[in-house]
Image 1: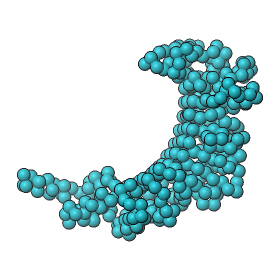
Image 2: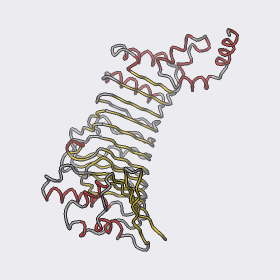
Image 3: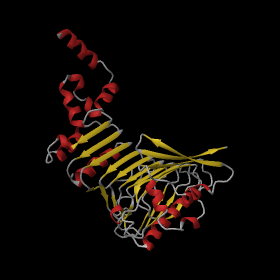
Image 4: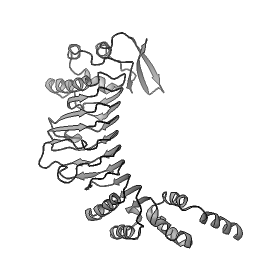
Length: 370
């Protein structure tokens, strides 16, 4: 048994450095450091691991900043491929900035920050960063301290992030990310803006969740404009209708929209009309889409005001497929809603088919037969 264990240890130690580095990348950094006691061969291997994984839960809150400084001072002068930070309690801004600046100086390509509490974060411009995931972050005035200056960023995920524009009522936070191809905004907040613009010249995929006025992150009356000439997929889910004053999607192929409006029974006719028109205006930006997925709540918002939808031309010109998902057996798409969805597509014969799905959901398919 001892001979077998010795042989196994020799085989591990004989592995090339880059293989051991990849193994250590799966560990939190404090666990990777502990492998130094295995043998002289392993003593300083952690110091050149390309991926740094910090988890504040593994250390006492008061010792975490000291641990960060120790890692940065002992680590070899080599690039950081990926930086993961999981914060289960507030972290001192100075400690966060020190670690982030270290990673930027060492050409970090992938940064993921997940926090259990909303806390202020300041990020410097970084030319090496390609993917970024931020959770529960609060950014100061973006023009002054945070401009998303990531010219080579290709993928950006933001979850419950607050954008605070103290001196401006217009924001275009992603305009400088010239190579961004994928953007996902989930439950993000822009509380002080009167106009939000999302500019993405290279965007091909955009997903927005948990959006709307009031408790959904926008002040009442805020206009939203999106300019994405290469966008192929747009998803707008778990949200409320807002004033999309301009959607520039000439290359759009796929759209998914799930919106609802609570309290419609108590809402005034003016409010119902306003919400329905917001959604119809939004649909006008989807004219080039070929595949559309809607939900029964979306259909209900379209049909809030009697006679209003019949006055609107169909926005879709290239439709090949529409799916309407519903969790109620009694739900049917009204004929005038079907006409609104189909009437704009000329030269193709479109058919409506209802399919039962797992006895829970219905899918209504509109497919083309050429």
